[in-house]
Length: 153
Image (tube, rainbow, N blue to C red; front, side, top):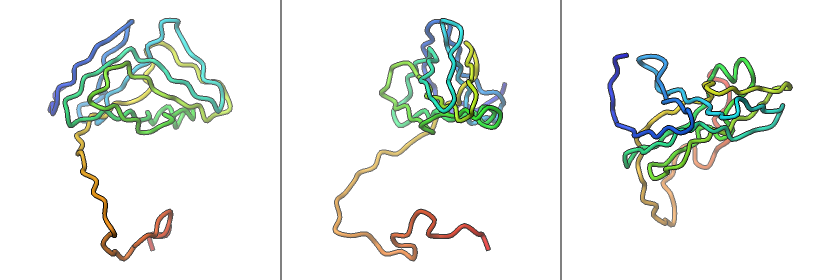
């Protein structure tokens, strides 16, 4: 698959883990799989689990990995990531575990090797936070949580 590589990510795989893989040449997220030495896990209805992947990564400084849901799991089974997107910082060296939640009314089975989430590698800025006595005025002001309305008309 031809692709532009913007950064190199070192990956350590443990216990039969699989390398994250982009499913198409223009995919933003690389699929990450469950790594289950005992075969499978079950997420009961309306419960969640941290699913091991066996993958540890080393990101360049100034990058993060975002753990995002797979749309097929959400649309077909009501399963998604609980903290989406989850952030993996460039100084984290532990195993990536994906917190999946089952919003359906039936148990969901995860097997070893199942694609459970996507990793999006993104550059980020580090901000300087400065105390201030006030903020500049805008038309919106302090309006939030639906203050701009629902309709596009």
